[in-house]
Image 1 (cartoon, rainbow, N blue to C red):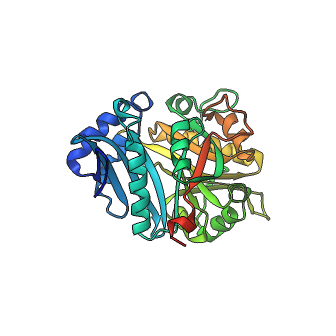
Image 2: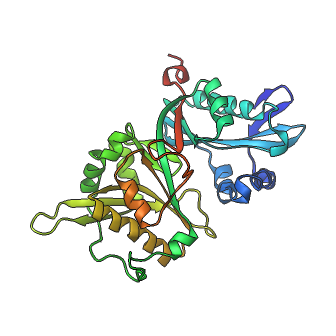
Length: 319
């Protein structure tokens, strides 16, 4: 247990769920994802889900998630709107970094909105440095229900050119040699979560995700475009979501795969899809044409709307 003046930091327990959800209810106009994941986070003993108490009451929380035994991800740092600027966020951030050090992690990263100036300033003061930026796009219930072809007819079945890919090695080779990985600086995006695009990480994601593709005509049959989509880690049984982990290829084929994702969500009652792309990545126009919206559309398309930060590995490891 870590303490700061007037603040106690400790691990979350099941009885904290009510206070955690109450704080979350004032975030993003009540549309925060934390209630969907709070039970899983409390039960997760591989990282650390911490709460900050002030005068014996939970007033903030944050999560350290392990992508691998050596790679940590910070997420869900929240402070009660009535108790901000009292050092709670700083205390939580410091405690999470301490946990990362204690676990011997080699990397520690997080992502935040480009307009979250308080979070950016807090973490830059703590030593985090920006390593990448991405465009965030989404399709909510309105876009999913409106899925259709450009002439307005609904898609009642998936595009027959779209096929499920059954050779993980073929998919992994396409991904690891892609412009997306190169333009991402070696990161593999997943909505608001980013991992290193190592062969092991990519194969693990392929193993649990839906992998779709469109091929060139016979006799070539090489891949013209690839889509990887999986259930969102922010979703719940009542509010399921999808995240596009990868979309790249020839423009027409990428567009067909983007539309397939909307059809897939519509057919399964899924209410939202999100995707992050590197600035200038060629899949972005295909997603927008299919019906996806740019988050923070006022930000020029050449600039990111999500920023990824990293704690200096040499400091984390005490080198």
